[in-house]
View 1: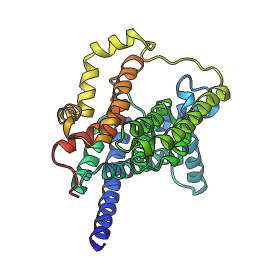
View 2 (view 1 turned 60 degrees about the vertical axis):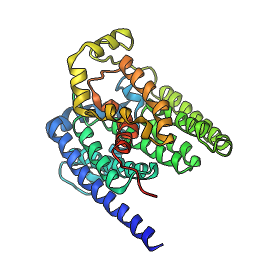
View 3 (view 1 turned 135 degrees about the horizontal axis):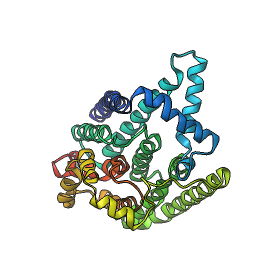
Length: 326
C-alpha cells in the first residue's frame, strides 16, 4: 500500500511539474512566433467576428474557445490587469497547454507507460506543439481538440463511459472533428477481449454522445445561419486540394518538423502496442489523415497533433521499452 501511494504521488508530482514547465515553453514559443502585435490586432479581430456571428464557415461554428476567452477578458478587466485582452489570450493558451499535458499524462499512464516514458512522451508532445506554427494564429480550437481526445482516451480506458456524453458537449462546441470520439468508444468495446460486458453500455453512451454532437452541430448552424465559406488558400475541399497537399514541398517539411519520425517509428513497432492503442489507431488515424488531406492545408501541421498525441507518441514509446512493469 505504501509503495502504491508513493508511486501515485510520484506520478502526480512529476506530471504537474512537467505540465507547468512544458506549458510555459510551448506558450512562449507560440506567442513569440505569432507576436504580441498579431494577437492584439488580427487574433482579436477574428475573436470579435466570432462574437458577432460573422466569422465564416467553418470557423463560426467553432465557438467554444471564443466564448471562454471573452469571459477571461472580462475577468482581466474587472481585475484592472494591464493589456487585458493580450494577457487573457496568453493566459488562456497557457491553461490549455496545462490541460493537454495533464490529460496526456493520465492517458499515457492508463495505457501502461512507465513514469519515465510518460514524461518523455509529454516532452515529445511539447516539441510537436511548439513546431506546428506554420500559417498559425493561437489556434485555440485546435489545441482544445487535442485535450478532448486525450480525455476521451483516458475515460474509455478507465471504462468511465458515462462521462463521454458530457465530454461531447464542449468537444462539439469546439470543433466538428470531435465526431470521432463516440466511434473510439464503440471500437474499444467491440474489439476488447471483454466485449460481452462492455459493448452494451459503450453503445448506449456512444449513441447519446453522437446525438449530443448532432444536436450541437445543427444547433450552431441554426443559431449563426449560413456563413461565407472560407477556402484554404483559394482551394475548396476535394481532389484539387489533395493534389496541392501532395505536391507542395512545404506540406512534407512542416509534417516532418512537427511530427518528426515518431509516426514511422510507432508503426514500425506496431506489434508491441497494447490492444486499446491498436484499436484507437484504426478508429482515428486513417479517417483523420484522409479527411484532412482532402479538406485542409496539411502544411498547417497542428491539425495532426491529435493522432500524434493519441496514438503515435505512446506507440513509439512502447517500442522502446516504455511499458510499466506490473
